[in-house]
Image (tube, rainbow, N blue to C red; front, side, top):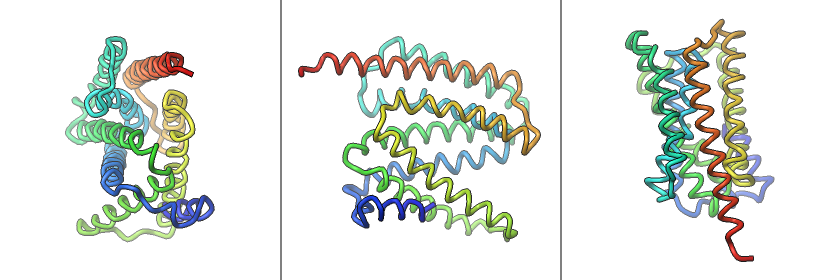
Length: 252
């Protein structure tokens, strides 16, 4: 994932783009992002692709809670109600995994933990974006993930076939570009504009899950995902409305 980020830095202003203003904030963002990634990978080995993605939609709900606790943002009853309904949708999706055995329940738990770490990472990016460039944020995230990933050799690695090696390399390249674009999107547009695009993941997850793995989401997953997505959109709508109200109240 590092080569596309380094190339972007060289074309965007040189090696100075990789110099952070504060290492501590990068550490928090990078470790939470790495936690999200590793939980996400673990979930994918235990539950269907669409299930893991749908449970991951709980991230905006966690963002509201973390913003209230760590950023001291005022969250009114309207958004708290949407959060409560959203978590009800999450429980609907997780419910069948209680009957699916230990591995299935653990997979759902990993997916939910990944959503929490993603929310924590997004809160960190919100704090950093004013003083740290998206390229810098992405670079240290990739370095952190590479280092933590290297430590997994202690648990024993399996030899890869040439095709598996190729797939892993392409995953890294696309992942690096995706992380870079995600960070840039939050720099140039409001979260309420960017975040709804994340819900298209359900379309991609269902499509790839069916054609590659022969999986289709159950009715329970569709119901729960619809509730979570609806709650998330309400939260984003209220967030955008609040920003517009505050902007109109500021003196010219």
